[in-house]
Amino acid sequence: MKFMDSLRWRTKLIILFVFLVSLTAVVTIALLHEIREKYFHRYMLDMIRPINTLVRNQIIHNMNYHEPDHFQHLLESFNFEGELESITVANDSGRIVFCADPDLKDEFIPIPGGAELTPSELDEIIMETDDTEPNVINTFSFIRNHQECQTCHDSTKAFLGIVRTRISRKAELATHKLLLLFDALGMMIMIIVILVIVANVHSRYFQKPYNRIKAKIKAIQKGNFDTRLEVEGPGELRFLADHISAMSTYLKKTRNELEMLHQKQMIRAGQLASVGEMAASVAHEIKNPAAGIKNALEIVVDENRVLQQNEIVKEIFVQINRIVKTIQDLLDFARPSDPRFQGIDICETMRQTVNLYRERFIRNDITIIEHFDDHVPIIDADKDLLNQVFTNLLLNSFQAVLSVEKRLIEIIISFKKLDNSVIVTISDSGAGISEENIKKIFTPFFTTKHKGTGLGLSLSLSIIRQHSGTIDAESKVGQGTKFTITLPIVHHS
Image (cartoon, rainbow, N blue to C red; front, top):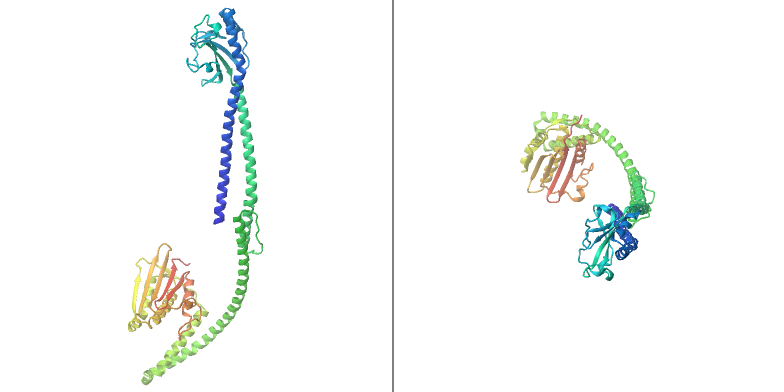
C-alpha cells in the first residue's frame, strides 16, 4: 500500500511538473512577445525620427522662403511606399493644414496629451495605436515655436503645429507571427525533450522495476520461488523487492515443509484408512453377534421376572447398548452415508429432537430455553442426519451441566437474511472446555469423558460439511460452551 501511494504521488508530481513547464513556456512566450513589441516600436521611432525632423525643418524653411502651398505640393508629389503610409501636418488646434491627400485638409486630428504639454514632451515623438486600425502606428512630433517663427505667430504659444506620420505595421505583425511560431516550436521541442527525459527516467527507475516486481509476483503465484528479485530504483521499490524476495524464500521453505507434512499425512491417512477399513470390518462382525446376544437376553429376561429386577442383568443391557452404540459410531465414521436432501422445517426438527430427551432433562433439573425465529425458511437438508447432529450436541450439553448447580441449556434458531443462511446455536452453563482442548474436540476419537468413542462431534462436523455449512465451538472454563451451526439456504439437485 505504501509503495502504491508513493507511485501515485510520483505520477502526480510528473503531471504537475509537465504542467508547470508548459505554463512557464506560455508565460515566457508572452513576455518575449511584449519585449519584442517594445523593441520594434523603439526601432520604428528611431526610423521615423529623421523623417519628422526633416519635415519640421522643411516646414520652417518653407514658411520663411516659399509660399504655403509649396510644401503642400511637395507632399502631394511624394511617393509613399513601403512602411511609410502618409505624412500629415496640423496646426496647434489639430486642424490639418498640409496632407498628401487634399481631401483630408481642414479636418481635425486629436492632439496627444492635450494642449498642456511640458517643453520636454514637445521634443519627444509620441507613438499611438488605434483599435480601429490595428495595422497602423501613428507617430506625433511637435513643431516648436522658435524665435524666427514669432515674427508671424504669437510668441506665447509653445508649439505651432503637429506632424503626424502613419507607419504600416504589416511587416511588424508578420515578423511577430513568425517569431511566435518559432517560439512555439522551440517550446514544444523543449517540452518534448523534457518529456522524453522524464519518460526515460520514469521507465528506468520506476516502470521497469515495477514490471519486474509484477512479473515476480506472478511467478510466485505460479509457484516459482527460486529467483531473487533485485531492482534499481527509489528506496520504496528496493524495499518492496527485498520483502518480496524474503517472502519468496519463506514461501519456498514453507512449501517444502508442507510437502513433507503432506507426505507424512498421506502416509498417516493411508494407515488410518487401513485401520478404518479393518475397524469397520471388525465392527460389522461384532455388531451382529452383539445384537443377537441382546435379543436372546431380552427373551430370557422377559420369561423370568426375577431377572428383570436383577441389577447385574440391567448392567449387562447397559454395556451391550454401549457396545452397539460404539459399533454404530465406528460404522458411521468409516462409511458415512450420502445425505438425502429434502425440504424440511429445521425448527420442527429441533423440537422433535428436544422432545425425545425432555423427560430426561426434567428429571435432572435442567432448564431448556428455546428461541425460534418465526421467519426461518424451509431448507434443503437430510432430516435424519441433522437430527443426529442435534442429538450429539444436546447430549454433550446434558453431560456438561450435570456437574454444575445452575443447569441451563439454551437453543436459538434464527434466519440471517443478509447471508441467506440459518443460524443454530446450542449453549449450556456447564463447566466449559479448556482452550487447549477446544481446538481438538472435532478430532476423531478425542474425548475427555471416561465413556464414549470421541466420534460424535467429528461425525457432526462431517454431516454439517455435507450440507455446505460450518460448525464452531466457543467455551470458557466455568462459564459454559456454545456451538454455532451455520447452514446456507441452498437447493440441492
